[in-house]
Image 1 (cartoon, helix red, strand yellow):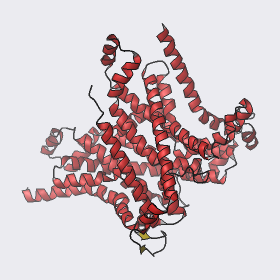
Image 2 (cartoon, each protein chain N blue to C red):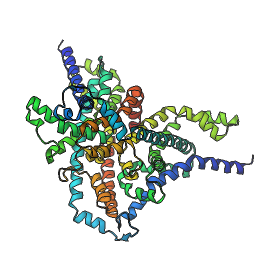
Image 3 (cartoon, chains in turn cyan, orange):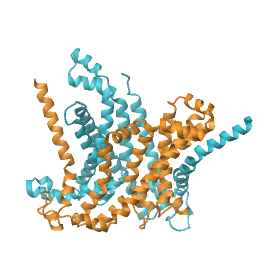
Image 4 (cartoon, rainbow over the protein chains, first blue to last red):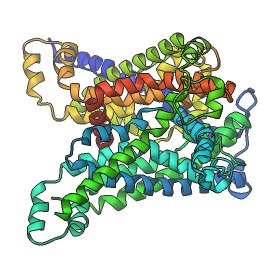
Length: 295
Length: 273
């Protein structure tokens, strides 16, 4: 076989292996993304053929007059901070307890993991039932006032409910990440420190935690990007209410596009949102990568 | 020793916490066996009289067999495509050491940085123009595109650890590039294949937002139909909760059988991805 024809054949092979993925990805992510760069500069209701180019008008409106976008972004931030802290602290605690071996360890790990495999729409619905029906029965039984509060009906409590349910749903997954991390820490290090007289508290904060930094980076990265994008759980649990107090940025974008039918404006919003997400994740990864140590 | 007592009380505490943790599921399940009146008046206790009708009713009300088949086919077809195309591209891009292939690799994984919300609006518009909305094959195609970046990334990384000699030997024996991939490389990649399968099955089976904006009415997935069903039967909790159980049971059974693989796969995907 001549080298030239071999080359052509290799190119043919390369194309058959790579082209399908490229076409698919361009089609369902990259071309739409480029389109959204254009639509963000237009006024368009999403249905009509009439698309008006309006330059930076959308961004002007977004920055100067849109209080909904700002409110939903602040909700997303508050929600994210609360969820990230609570999820990771509880997950780490559970992981430390459940790496010690006792009879029920593997069953308990599975128990905490189960909510993570249930879809968020269903989770929202289950908790809607718990907060409304089960709580009123619990009140009749215990007469504790907390079961009588309107957990989804008042702004502050609805915030707590959304955070609580999110933590409940995902804590098992993060626990597994920490368990995997803890299991990779050599036991001799802790033993040596114990012989040198370090107590449990010191051993955890001086040895285990620094060595756990890679897992912490991963867990934080995932929990940050997931919580900033929160949508489904709010959609079924509170639908953004009461009022608009639990409307997240993603839900605000969804409403703008599919309820208010302002596609152009919604894409402008979503682009701003992406820039913010990328900034936040970038800062976080940079910060935590610098804190990792080797065993 | 004081230490032993401490360990035991921690273990007891975590066991009680786990039971409380699962209590909502327990409440849902016992209330599916009650009639309408009992669900409203008596949420916490065992059913006074065990009612089985809810399951039969919901089975036909939401057309469960059809929805289940829809969701299953959608998930299987999507995941099969993601694994096949992702593995092929990940392998070839990793083995070809040219500037073009490096560029194409970054082009392929770039969407991992883009949140879905940033392009979902134009995606529906593009899909509409290409006649990909309102039916499952179109949705499958979009899932292929959305799932591939992560899959290519995972396969690309794994192929680096496979020794080149394996392919060189086969190639000298006259094996074609396609046979090398399918008979030699693909079997070696099975650990990543399982990670990719698990991550994508969990995602696609449970996904809500994409079906919500891509399918209108006629065809539906379990998640979408159950959401509409909850809206319709808002106050009839006995039916709504039964729907919850029927939608949730398949993934939970799948999880209980494949627990080890699922947890390992999901954590591996998270750590590498």
